[in-house]
Length: 231
Image (cartoon, rainbow, N blue to C red; front, side, top):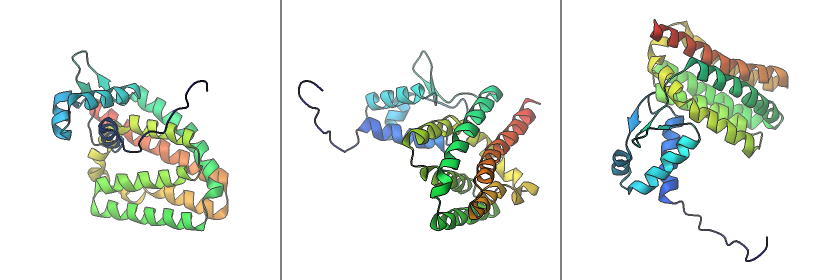
């Protein structure tokens, strides 16, 4: 680079970054419903900050297609769409399936033990009915796997897909308590167990296939509930 070299910047996060990080985490975890809206002023009051960092954080999230911004400046969570759900699921199967396959050789005995512990927690949350903890355990399982691929680029794409899946996570979570009263209670962690069993055998194709089926099974549930809502 010609001219003066760039100088290191301070490691401390800006207010905008902190607002962005909190909103991004909330969206990814399904904290907001589809079509839920919020103004810059209301968020600024909630974060106890000025309007500017909130406005910039919302713009960043809109650029990631996690939010929409109305002409009046109100931010809102995108509506549920079967077409978008199918597109997100297709992308997840391709990207997360490939990432899981890359990660598999690096998931040693300690990782497999950690994944089994997460599965046990996942099952326990289903018994207790703690839906938020259930969603958290599911996410921790997936991201423990993806982290082993050691690919920041793939991880970035996966995080964006989960970010855009936020309204669907909330939609499914709102119906999970009823669902857990059915036979589904014995099935929802099944694909995770199949994945770890495949790792134990060193069967990478089976591991990837179980990951992909886990993703499409969630889509199947969502489509069923969307159909019920439309009816």
